[in-house]
Image: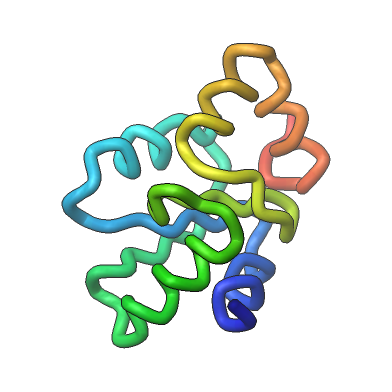
Length: 100
């Protein structure tokens, strides 16, 4: 878990994905222009350990998993819900990921 949380804190927005996941791709494009750091697990040497750690943090399925402002926000459901309620943009602003 330590590696995932450490990587999740390296940028204002960090997204853990898999190249084969179409939901991950749609999440990457909904970031309001935020400069996201993206880790594709299926190309990472520690893929299995990172996937297990994300699941232990509560991500079911493990990807996409989104950290905003060094905190795990969750997966696709949480991001879409925040976006529909108009709260996602505010998280990006507070994390200094975008400026208005």
